[in-house]
Image (cartoon, rainbow, N blue to C red; front, side, top):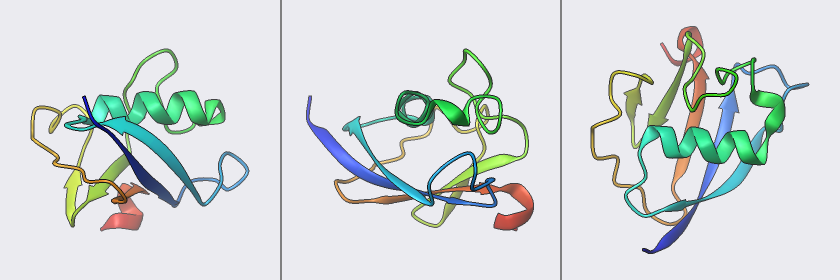
Length: 98
């Protein structure tokens, strides 16, 4: 399976927890849980802050914005996200994203 690299940017996430943006590698056809798993591996400090400890799920109140569409973990995981190499993924608090 083809691997792609994406940039994840954080908005409304405590800066002491993470960097402003990070590059992750994903399999083509990745789902939300795959993005979260890659973030848990790359930035363990996100666990408990925005990622449920020991799970590939977001804490309530955080969402993804990919290609202008908001994805709320647990509701949209079956949707085809269609990420491409170089795509940007925003992680937002729900109040930050609207």
